[in-house]
Image (cartoon, rainbow, N blue to C red; front, side):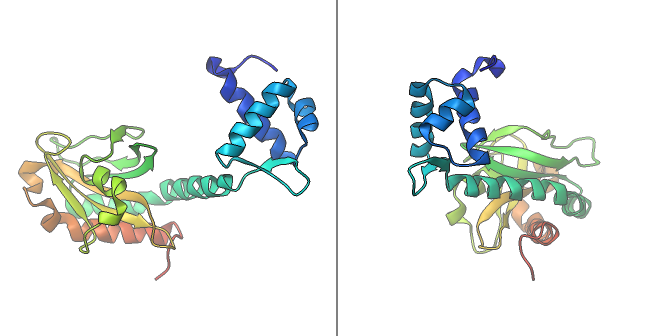
Length: 221
């Protein structure tokens, strides 16, 4: 095989195994021939991928793509559709509140800002797209970390929790099965949002989340 990207040889080889299985199921011998890996390496990687549900054995004992990839593909597809559809809902929320707005997705043990619009005010919250923030801190972090703990009111707020002087309110974006797939948020300085930001902006954030669900085709009224 060629040189690895970034020196991550094992990852490159694992991706090579998945790539050839994308075409069709393979026996171990066919996997070795298609990837150029040694028999021991091909077997070790295929078994490791099988352990994680990314590879399975078919009725003939050949290696094939695993069912977990279906869930991963669905999550990736939903994430991309959300980003593509987020613009109008974010703009509506920013205009309704006058504050900065963000859309977060959970990625492992962090949340990632995948879309954002800034407040027109000089003093504002700035969360750049691509920012990776902790779970468990801030309204969006708590919402994504503990989806089953969502209050009946439909939103979570925080005051000075992740960053001093900043308050935020977040509402869940739900898929057709009612699962939380993202968090829609508004954030700004406590001087404007007050120490009860949920009472001030909760309804607007929930409305924006429902609009995004409709625009992204996740749910229908």
